Image 1 (cartoon, rainbow, N blue to C red):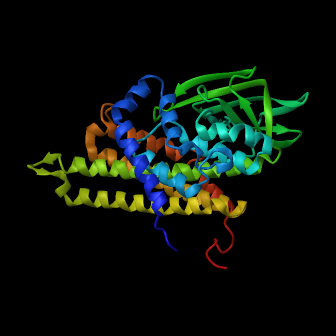
Image 2 (image 1 turned 45 degrees about the vertical axis):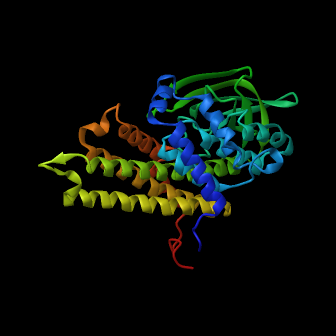
Length: 371
């Protein structure tokens, strides 16, 4: 199998890498954190590069690309620990494009593609514990439309988004709805997360909603799987840059008159970090390529990938901090922020233990190894 990227994919990678290097330095990120952890101007810059339309067909104003291009982009954004939730544009546009009716697609996909609308997935509830089939949100028919009552937690940029993709129970079945943030009955409480990006708790009190699909569980599963693949790619980019920073530091830091990079024991630890990075990269590719498989195979593959990524994210983050010593946890040094981002990614869309359980539940007698 050929894993080489095409010329167009490589050009896309180069364009994003140049933007991160020139426009999203650590100093700018710190200013954004101080201002609340989200900058619409940065999101608009990503939209001007066409990135918000990667998952959207050309008929709706997008680039008509797909998962591999999204992976390429997110690896580069991960290197800059970019906080603006481009992943959400991929998640919601993929779900609407695959499951939404023509009217919803025509109304929202062009807005997402242009960056005019930031639509985010609002699916997490306190009692769900990462399970997608546990949902207390309720939807009822209200005239020609619908009304949703729900409390959703840790919604990315929830108090800044233009609309939410919300799963809710409708007549005993999970359905997916689109709720505008400016609608009546919508209340948000924003805050910074562990990695200093912005999130919010969203409360809906009979908020007017547009039905996206009554096949809500399948649509939500697909959206979350796209999110997992995106998180994997983001994590690979973040680990790659943090490993590079760690090696650079070791080549400068001296003890006993020599650089600590010359100590064999520390070199072995860096080798272990590199091995974990490459294991994560291969599973990120695996996750991305399996997004087009049938639901059962896709769900199993994405959980497998998230298990490996969770292990790698934690190992690379913790080893990188230890090899830096005290400076590795100081707020003034970029490395500590890479560590926090890696830690948060491990828990996003299900932590390692959750997905280990998912893999176990889907394991057959042959463990998927033998026919």
